[in-house]
Image 1: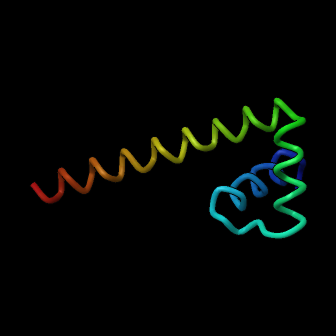
Image 2: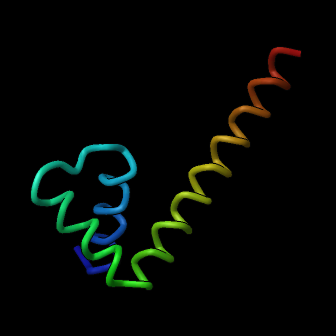
Length: 64
């Protein structure tokens, strides 16, 4: 697994609420110190929001 995949998995674990304890504390500390990580987190949030919007629109269209 490459570094980008590890970061992606870590971000997803954070967003899904799976990170706890020391791992969560370490991630939050790294977020404060690492602008690149914050940018990747925001990008992942935007991607997830976009996917959720598409799914919602598909559901609305299906119900119509």
